[in-house]
Length: 109
Image (cartoon, rainbow, N blue to C red; front, side, top):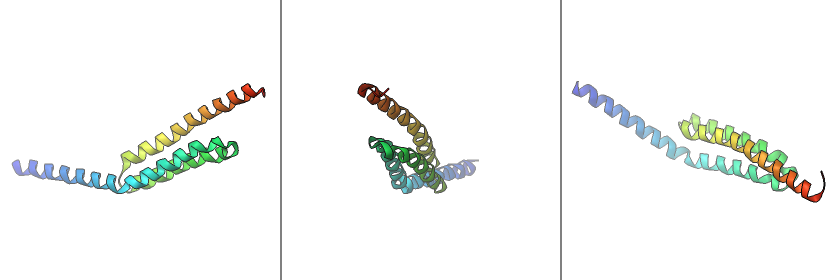
């Protein structure tokens, strides 16, 4: 039984090393994905660019997340995909509120 436990522990340790290697390998990719998402969130500063900024954010999150998941970093991919999608929806609502308040303050309502 001792050899069996040792074999299981060795397999667990090898799996943890593989997971850590995948995280380190895909870290620059995940970082670039977040940069695309954040740039997409900031594009509405120029109103017409905001219309293409949000789809860029969502598509970048999905594509980069899928690539990261295929390379073994599923946890980082899931966080990027859900964070990118739900964050984009939240930022979109904030920008609509900002545009509404600016329009109301300028008398365009």
